[in-house]
Structures are given as C-alpha cells and as structure tokens.
Figure (spheres, rainbow, N blue to C red):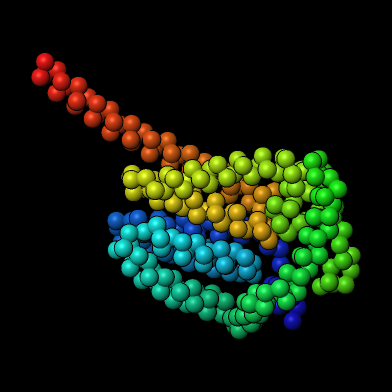
Length: 285
C-alpha cells in the first residue's frame, strides 16, 4: 500500500518534454526512407511513452492520443496506411515493455492506471477536477480585483481542498492561462500568449509548404508540439514550469530553423529560375 501511494503521489516532472518527444518521434517516423531509422524511432517512442505513462498524468496521455489523430490528416494516403501499422506496433511494444520492465509490480501499476482512466471518464464528477474548480474560482475572483497589474509572481492562492479537507496556501495554479492573468495581469498575459500564438501559426503555415522532407517533418512536429503546449496549459501552468518553457523555447528554435531552411531553399530555386530566364533573354538578344 505504501509503495502504491508513493507511485500515485510522486512528483510529476518532465511530462511536457516526454509528450512533445513522442510527437516528434511519431512525425519523423513517417518521413524516414530507411527501415532501420524507423525501427530506432519506434524504440525511442516506446521508451519515452512508457516514461510518460508512469508519470500518471492523464492530460498528457490524452494530448499524445489527440496529436496522433491530428497527424493522420497531415500525411499523404500511403503514409496514413503506414501510420495504422505503426500504431499497432506501438501498442504491442508498449504492452510488452510494460510487462517486461515492471515485473511483479505490473498488476499494482495496472490497477493505478485503470483507476486514473476511470476517474477521467467520470468528467466533472472527478474529485481531482472538482478540486481544481475551487482553485480556479478563487484565482478568477482575484483577477477581477486586479485585472491590469495582477497580484505578483510570489502571491499565493488560498482555497479549500476538497480532497484533503484542508485549506491550501500555494503558489501553484493548475491552469497556465489563469496563472498568467493572476500573476501578471491580463495585458501582460495576452502579450506573452500572442508571442506563442505567432509561432504556432508560423509552424502551421510552414507545415503546408512543399519543401525538403526533413524540414517538412520538423514544421509539422513543431506545430503539433506547440498545440500540445496550448492544451497542456488548461490543467497545469506549463508556461512557467522549467520543463514547460524549456520545451517551448526548443519548439520556437526548431520552428525558426525550419523557416530559415525552407526560405533559403525557395530563394535558391527562385535564383536559379531567374538566372535561367536572364540567360535565355541574353541569347535571344
């Protein structure tokens, strides 16, 4: 019982990194020409996905499932068929790894995972979610008092936790959007979010352009990764967590790298076309 409690109540760190890593692994798997690279990427996805599962963070499980479905629409028809095959392989690998690596703890952890899924399915009746509603209500009421300036980065929220039956005094708010508005005020929160929104749209439009397969895959992965960040912040303040903003900065860097290379490739094509036209005009003259 003590071991089960420690598993269920362990510190949940790096979920954002794990979640986005799975997304990148999935995207690049479908843009490989060599079978060996596909196998290596599938092994990578399996290891990271197992680590994500063992954080017991339901939001991030659901995020990767949603991103897997969205990826389906970015791929050509032949790749979609491969995707269904890869999905089957990943499920088999995940289940096999689960039993092989966990050994005699398998049944215990399986029960914990089952309970987490069942509580997610209960919707607003989920006690964990109800507790966050109380937390959000308090934070929103304070935002109404200080909409422009916020209450400061170090200010604590105070709310009655229905799970423990005690009043919590904490700096944590399980919603990144409410967190920013509560701490910094609505204008500064919108400024920060507009910066992230700009790169999300940039990654999306880059993903639609015809270019080198590597940078095409990078653009799609960045868009889905940034979309994952937006979703994750509905239940946690990933905008300010160390692993959260580390992931955000990497996604912005990768988006910029993809943009520079795609634009450079297009510029080279335009330069060649211009030179050819000039050469033809000179010959005609």
